[in-house]
Image 1 (cartoon, rainbow, N blue to C red):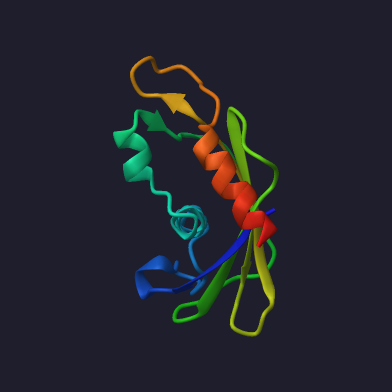
Image 2 (cartoon, one colour):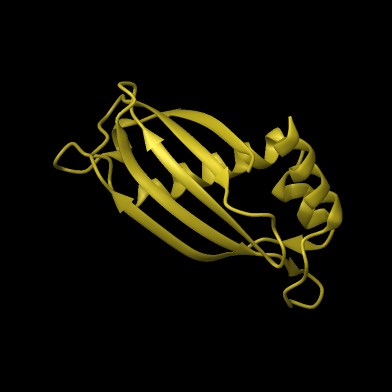
Length: 136
């Protein structure tokens, strides 16, 4: 499936007393990866919300392999696991500048109709963009 790469530099305030990136900040890093993935397809949460679609996180799983540190340049690799339906699932890998794998993660989000608050199928326009990007 379609893959996107994003980079982020670790800020001092993202580290803990041990000098490691605080574990809770990884959720923000993978969100950056997901937003970049959407943007690379010409999609945005803002536009989806204007069109009556929410995309709340249903599940988040993170595996910490090695720590990241202040000032590290991290690369977030975001992959779509499968074509979206009512759910959309992303897989992530976070690497440091030495290309060492630091973290893996997976998120599942649910397409929800803002008006009804009920799950809905992924709009065909989004599926088409994913299919087109996956072929390239």
